[in-house]
Length: 176
Image (cartoon, rainbow, N blue to C red; front, side, top):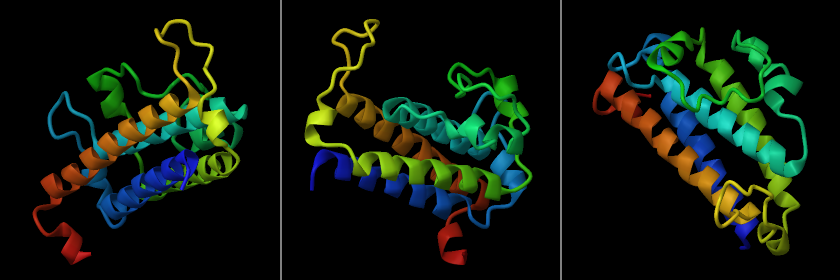
């Protein structure tokens, strides 16, 4: 298995974790912030998907699905590809609400499919390509960017799973 296949597998695990954690969850708990300054399950799922969409689309040289496929409208948000949630205030986190987990999972599935397609064409040599981002020292490679994406997405998917248990109690997975 090469590096791109490992990244694809890891992102698939993130996607499956999202499905396990969000499917069947009452929208009230998905939108609930445990405290006034912590992220909701909805915000975390939206954010990790936005970051994946942003990063993979940039690497693939494609427009983000957020705007090109109209996902922003399904979330009732502006068509702003720079909006990924980084630096959001608690008020901005609280403002992100969904009517159904279907929009979160639909967007996540679309972005994951794009990621799989992109990664299927990535060679080991491609992973070594240095990105022109002089704000970093050393400048990252495609492989470093993808590992960073997996790390970020995995942490947020775990937070979503934790919050599902926090809100629904121990054994929520067995009850499904």
